[in-house]
Amino acid sequence: MRLDDFDPNAIDVGDQSGGRMRMPGRGGQVGCGTLVIVLIAAVVFGVDPAQMLGQMGGSAPSEQQEAPSQGGKSETEVCMADPLRKGTCDTLYSLNQTWEPIFAAARIQFSQPKLRFYSQVGSSGCGTAQSAMGPFYCPSDNGIYIDTDFYREMDQKLGAGGDFARSYVIAHEYGHHIQTITGLSDQIRSLQQQNPRRANQLQVRMELQADCYAGVWAARNKDRIEPGDMEEGLTAAHSIGDDTLMKNAGRRPVEASFTHGSSAQRVEALRRGMQSGDDSVCDVYMQ
Image (tube, rainbow, N blue to C red; front, top):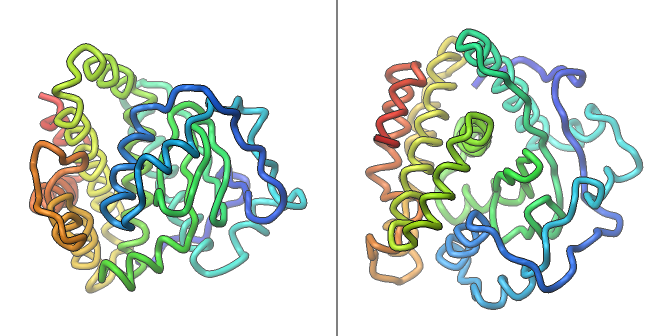
């Protein structure tokens, strides 16, 4: 995908790699989003959920507790550290440039998410970040967190390599930011608390809508798409479907335990956004 080079003045990027991390204290609550991440980590990487929850059971740190960028690096220095980071920053810049006008046209206030790179372990407004959790979005601080080693895991373990596949990952997490600033995330969390039995089902709807939003971004940048990009994205969506992940982990897929949707659902959601380029088509997942 031929994306423009990022503008360091138009993105909020930081680096938590190296240096000491300020970890949250014990005894707090773990948010629903974190629980979902832990469960997916258990499926993909064979991580013991109880162990991870024990490590992440602290209260969420405030914005001031975030570990500072190592050495006070600028956005340019952070993004240019390696090609994977550069591609991620280019994607973030493109996402900002795509979604801000959409919100302006709808007369809805828009705010950009921040992007934080970390290695192995980091700190977010939702608690400790760990590589085994994969990329995630934290609504508490509007942050997208990623250890770029995940891209290598996608390529080597899931067979989902390529620059567009990597961009899809960030575009999906950006979709959760959209859900947060529109108030949808809070609505879904409230419904999950009111009806715990539907918690997974509601979470699946959230994830599929985020996939659809990722497709909308791709469609609105179709002039940047190269041959094979679409296939990379759809392959990535299929590879991280709950049923496929469970099968690959030697587990029998159980739909009631799905938190992100089946491979077929995720492919369909991404394709829906790609074919339309209209974010309103993604509302179907919340009807």
